[in-house]
Length: 180
Image 1 (spheres, rainbow, N blue to C red):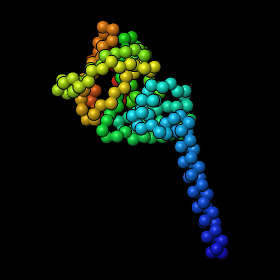
Image 2 (cartoon, helix red, strand yellow):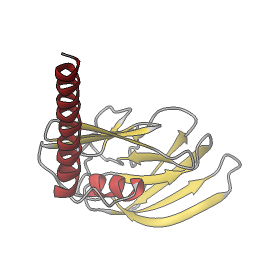
Image 3 (spheres, rainbow, N blue to C red):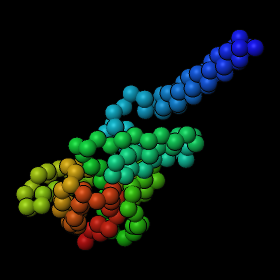
Image 4 (cartoon, helix red, strand yellow):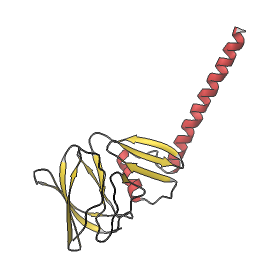
């Protein structure tokens, strides 16, 4: 009887191990099929922000994690403590309310437009000045230091906008940057 119980336990253990291995293989294969398996977190964010996917790929980015849904399978990727990602969608006529940026869902008015972006630290020092493109989604993404306040100025075809971004909070999407 003890021998029978030991055999049942061993078989059950092998079934559980096999199920776990198959689950990990499916997860790995799904990430591989989209080319996400070899990307670091910044590359993954940039890819999701700038490439067009169907409804089978959904992703949003918060303060501490990137949430990714691939064909109904949920994945979470931690954001390193050395950066904070924000995305903003400058507009002229229309925008939408947003707080947590959807890398695959937010759509800004001004897609594929070059804009001059200036980033100032809390003391008013210019820390970056660069022409950036809004991409297909009409948004510009920035990697900033955490727990800092920034002023971001945007210029486009003679129109300007300025807004504050505080990376000590949770807001990752800024959509109230009306160019005038």
